[in-house]
Image (cartoon, helix red, strand yellow):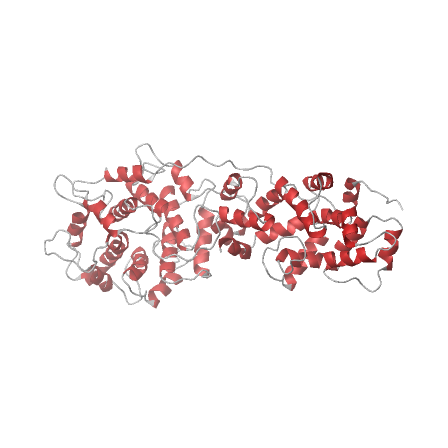
Length: 568
């Protein structure tokens, strides 16, 4: 009996609608970034004063940050911290009068009064900041600080301890935050009441202000909030810490599309925000951190901190958005943010896969082998803020996915690759946006599949047995006479396959395969587990409501669980 044929495009129109249009454009990879650290460090060295220090706006203002930045710039590119190299870089900066950045500090701390408690509001903050930004990174003993060798030894640990207040603070709120960060560097646990004080100082909007209080007249700011997040992580906060997440959410609201942050100055605030983001386990050059804490930011334009700071690099090596304020201060904090070798002191385990890792995992899951195209443009699109789900839809709309999907279906169900004549019209359907489930129906209704199953038109039981196993994962019902009659009356097998795929059971089996609960189906199992009841219901609703297999795949790749798979 001759088989009634139906044009593929007509059959596709009868079976399913079109999918959402793929991502329209890609972001071209930027040119290799210039070396910013060396010219920035050279600029900072040129700001040294005759007294050996870098302070211009006041004692302790720029100096500790500049010292740390120069120590950062002196590190080898091997991922380790070399105290000796850091110390040598600072000691080499000697003025004509024989002063160095360390002798300048010695002169300052020698002025701390004998009764340190009497001036603890200032000296505790100074001591904590010096431990964090100067003494610990340079490998100097904070309990015996005397670079001059003039017997004027200062015990900065004692200064810090003497400045501790009954409520757990160390004077000014900024000093308290530095004290929290200093404790682990001194090999000590942070006092619980101090951590509690920091947590209690968070404002309703997730921020902290420089006073560490809820005064409605003094708004929270990026710089204090970023330091508070670093302090909490250094003090033992975990990845699911709600206080840290609220702080990050506040910072995310301040980040502009160009990567700048509204604050003390945009360079300063962007730099300290980057350190807070890194402390929380994220890469400040990737948008994932912002997506995790602020849903409405997903898909919005994003510029990483490093790319933003590159736009602010000046011809003299400085990195500053304005000549107002201290250019050295902005440049020093920018160097710290670009390097991120010493700060943040405490860092949570990585919370997001990089864009490159995500795409590598996606290629492995979708194609089981490296892609045939370079993913540089897709990486840059993700780093520019394109939502992962949208990027996945773009990949799923590509010729590589279309070609390999058709091949995968044939190898799974027919146990051979398709011929060119078999593959071309199916790839055309995928290119037109038709769901891969339609292509699956065509393959399961092809002459090759019918023959491989041992079925015949006038004796379709063997074909139906194979079809049930491949579509529903089980043997046929005892009574499948209706399908058998349709087949014997000339109904194309693809229609029967489509009917099973769209039955109550069909989408459930497909969803199990997409999650990875069964490998009987050629779809990639993305999570290696059975879907929960709620997950299955949601995915089946997508498939039953005009959505496609590719929609469900894209949704799964946007989950935190899939991100964990990519970074592991």
